Image (cartoon, rainbow, N blue to C red; front, side, top):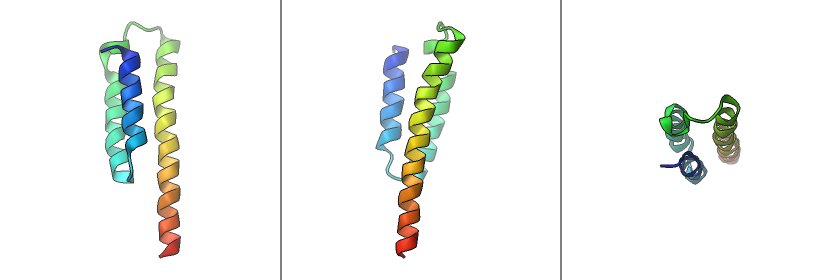
Length: 76
């Protein structure tokens, strides 16, 4: 599988998470992606940029889900 396709798939999985528990599981997938050999031929800077795209998607989704969770708590 091409590393770009794999990256896009991991981001789609992250974006599909609806709960914090799902997102924590997706974080394991993110970690596996970073250790996958599909991008080992890339230079250091390109690998870092690739990882940052996935991490950014993760952190944005984490913030969104945390905000939703806090809203639910405040409405209870």
